[in-house]
Image (cartoon, rainbow, N blue to C red; front, side):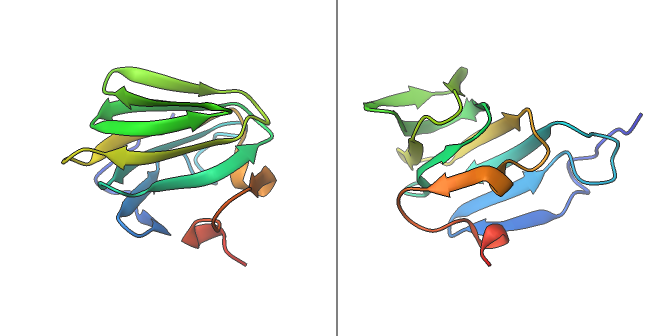
Length: 127
């Protein structure tokens, strides 16, 4: 059973002012899930996109303005964004402090089946 030391995992190139670390990775024994930790600075976030799988984003600290479908609202710490497959979504960190997030997908590489409706894919997934 792997135990992941978060201090030892490499940072994944993502977006400006958006730092990301993959807690689960190829070769660690997981076969059907993805878990990551991110620190998103004020003004940074993810552009409008969809996934073919569920996505859960747990907000540990800070505040994000989240768009899920046609709804937009501010969401703070101790809340989870539950994003069903195919639902257009985006978020931006708002307020003076960074947002700290944990993101879970029930598939190993969700970005193999992601469609960006606005903006570009993150640095690690650009062709």
